[in-house]
Length: 244
Image 1 (cartoon, rainbow, N blue to C red):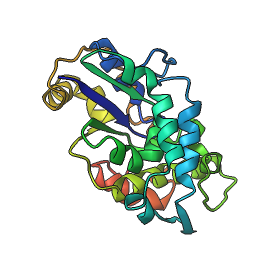
Image 2 (image 1 turned 180 degrees about the vertical axis):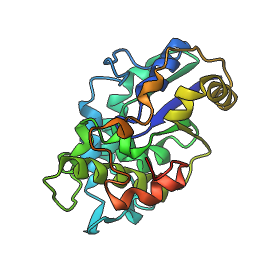
Image 3 (image 1 turned 30 degrees about the vertical axis):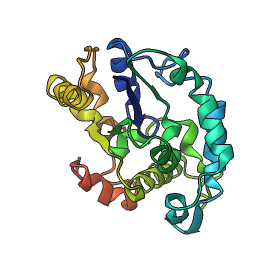
Image 4 (image 1 turned 135 degrees about the horizontal axis):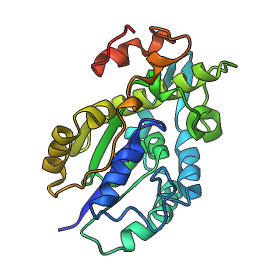
């Protein structure tokens, strides 16, 4: 029986850890990967993100209307681009296969509609750590998504994190999904891998993890308890503390 897997999570959520784990476990993750474990080349996925973005309406401040995505016919151009991006995955005969690239999160609603039966691993990390480093999705306008401009790069990253989190929350859950915190994978690797093995129904390899990757934001020169107040709800929802 074939198992298809994808990882959903914003860039710098530590998704390379699960991608490398899957690869070490014999999961086919595409014919080419970059050092972050992303399936490359990414261009068809990037273009697919821009196609879906045409149907997302920014309604001001930190609000977007995602409703059409869940009922309208999926744009045929989007489907073609996704199938182009995943061509090598679908041609491969491995029993366990999948892909990881953070931009999949930007098109999550239509990926779920196209592939309702696959295993979704929702990978999440404290957003205060997530926004410390730059990522291609920092500026949502690069993918056709409108938002209120800011010259503060960290606020821009926080808006990107918030947008993707809200998009995921708005999307009806697929049949098979599990949420894993990066921090749990690092600090409680064995327990977390057992949970993932139960979800995927096959054994997973173990990779080296670095505990110093957790709560990096607290070790910044000028740590702030909450840099952007609009992240507060998501921080609490996912079991992180608000204080240093």
